[in-house]
Length: 137
Image 1 (cartoon, rainbow, N blue to C red):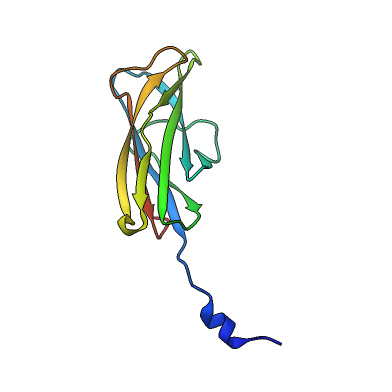
Image 2 (image 1 turned 135 degrees about the vertical axis):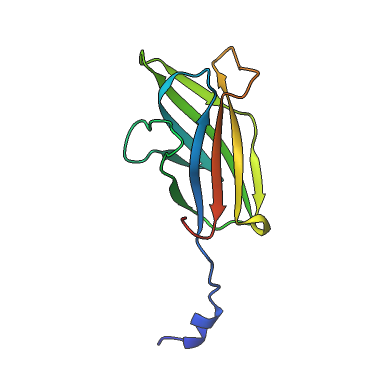
């Protein structure tokens, strides 16, 4: 038998969305493509989803990913770049953005540095603008 009261007791949660708004590179980087890798509470996403590389430019399309409802969101971003000679570089940061539920919606910028196994740049080489919100827009 179906219990109508059970329906009333189910807590309705809104879906949250993580969006990559755009990417900006330092003028010194001669890059033909980027791939942004995002981790939200341990779950990975990658932009672009329908291609291997996205051409960096001010009009890059944004992309949103559904994320699980949480009281705290821990966000880490890194980026792969490819140059004209097909050399791939990795840009990372040790920063971990922590956003509480009460801060949503929020837009933020994540700074990335060129890094390798033995070297990390001291200057910001890329900026990823992102949004965490209740809607994918």
